[in-house]
Length: 152
Image (cartoon, rainbow, N blue to C red; front, side, top):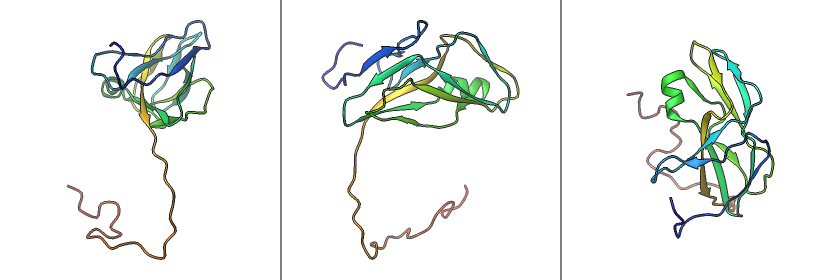
């Protein structure tokens, strides 16, 4: 996973001694795995949620965000996912990255120091200028909302 022409440089700081740096787990991975940095393990019962620290802080370049997303293996095997997904880390945030986990499963889920609990994607940000108008152009869909095309 060497330096490519499209790599974005993100400064990172360890805030806790046990903090592990995020890393890509394969050559083509879009996201870097995030690890928890805990002094003691946390037991997350079914239906409960908890915010866990990663022990790191980042400095993104202007024009980028970090998106924190669930790991599919945790969701599929244990019913554990992120409550706020994707979580957004703005380029001007310098605090510790924390992750809000929720256990949708029926069994306790034990979180230990160093566990991979989420993934982080670095993405460009588009900002817009809102243009107030009196009416919008018509489309075939119009104002059809949730489920307007059917359920199946």
